[in-house]
Length: 291
Image (cartoon, rainbow, N blue to C red; front, side, top):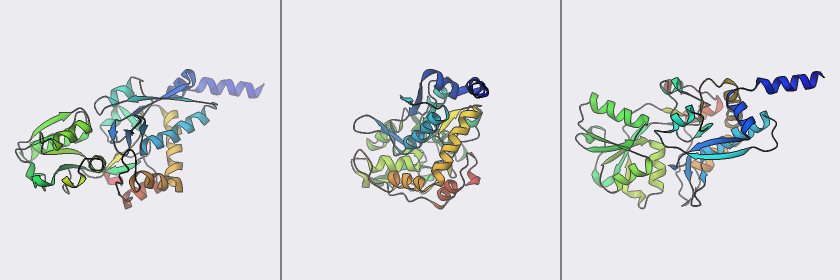
């Protein structure tokens, strides 16, 4: 009698995303189209990537938490400008990509533990001979609409009086194409995303990523709904266990140190000391100085 009583109490206590997933029988993952190697479409138009693999671990943990025999996973393509609204309105339950965790965004959404550290830089063509942010003075640049990168570009433009023309692009693919076709001299984006786009470009040697950065190291995290304590606890436990285990380093190596689909490009980006520390002591802190 006590057992059935506690079981029904447990069922009643489910709230937020866990209650929603239990009721509907599926969980919806927001993914990106071209955020290599975090979340992108392969040659079969299936979402793959480092963040997608992490989200699969969270989904497994949710399935265990809810004691489900099976849990359907649905996928929803999101863009930089739409990912937060789609999370807030309940369309997606996890956002698996390269979304920067910062204090401003934490007013609207929450994050699980950091899975990558990046900095905002720019890519240009080698033949353009643009070495620094100062060299962008008076030039046309591009960044994705709704991204932290475009905010940083606008801030630098104003503070340094650069007189840049800043064009908002729908996504990374469109932005990179603008540099490729000469409609913009530089594309401002997280350096790891730029590395992925270059690795898959027609002529990777034609492009260079700036040493100058528009930001300090920034943490990426899988995005969750705000104020959903129970769901976040499941996600935090799953990611913490993954990152601390040998599987975490192996997963990193799979996507950053080995050939990846669809073209077999190798980003060849070893895990940084800061990233190693973030995996050893998982944290969801939005503060760059934490790392």
